[in-house]
Image 1 (cartoon, rainbow over the protein chains, first blue to last red):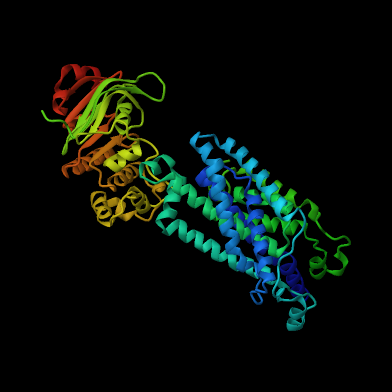
Image 2: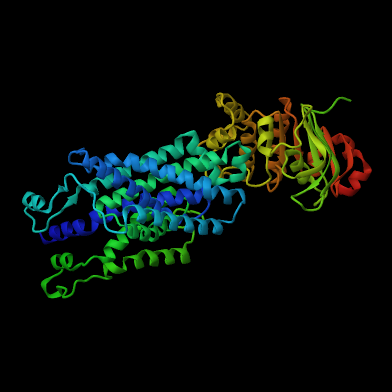
Length: 336
Length: 237
């Protein structure tokens, strides 16, 4: 019984949150990895692209709520998501036409692109704060739990409860759908294959008559969708704050690099690796250990390896280790 | 004599703003023919072919395909006009399957490419067996077959090969030459740069020996092989 309690406590405090967080990071990292493989630079503006898409979704959600529209037990934000995606697509295409295209024509070096994306990041950052403000916004509505801790305890008779938030369920289901769609697109459609061809060998793609501007356009459209979806899922699960989204850049990049930049499967694996590391290292294990260990070994402290304030140190450390020992990542991506 | 199907006529030029590498260099090929460019290292063999394909600045002279002046067209536009080009290196999509490589080769076509793909598979049967394997996992000779197959997917009017046998074993080289002859029998003009001058001239209808970016000797493959001067300087006696 103690073992079961320990297991439930573990799943409740580590497993479920890490899977949800991992899915959000994975979708974010997919966007980063796509930009890297097609446009060949690390897009520092990705976190703020997520913030922009989420902001539009929140504004539309509020508007829908003011009209009295709701999505039953699901969050209204899901209805507003397509609007957020469309607006982000427009912003991405606008940024590409006005900024990135200029540097492509110059055949600028990747590092120049990275710096340019840094500038774009500050612009978007300012735009989002200007419109919605720097504060915390909560926009999740509908049913709060799929299973609440109390119901679970009543159901199983265990001392520990297992709670699964609706937003966590939505996150995982959406992630599965998004990843399946993306892989189908990249592997089965002509446009998707042309994107892979362009990423694999740019010169040969040109010789084969693949139009680079079209490939770039499709990439931004997909990246806009991925960024918005990742941002909205994260915001529903936790809350929306522009600065938090900027900070998400680190775990997202760590995920993409750990998996291998340019490898979509790697981005997904990396997302979960980072999420699980972060959650397990910042979790206070006291409760779980109390159940499993004999009375005499009962821990006095919280058994928390690292305070949650330092959670970014986890992604950073993993990033450094991977770059030192396996710069191409787990799934044979490109070296940074 | 009437104008050849594809001709790079008295081309002079170099890369970017750099010095001229080619000087009044002329290269031509006709349907059903294999034309081979040979010469010592640094003679500008590949450069001459790249000039024909539009990869460097031709400052004087002209490139004409089927009588049409294409000197100012970009390489991409030349592909649309019917030129198939197989670069010497990085000539396949390594992360994609053989079939996807062929599919990308036929990207500009809007009609059904399955027939052409079948023809490529008939020509290179090994590719049919490996169609679902990533091209990067194939051997050197098989990769070259993928590369040639990819170029054939556009149904080009002329095929240009830049050192197709670079880095493959002599046995594979012979096999590749056999395939190239087979392709040429379909009537497709083939322009080829080769390091292995002797073997290449044996299958060539026309040979161009370049020295320092100029035409040194021109003739049929057999003539060049028989020419004592050519033998002495380039073929090792």
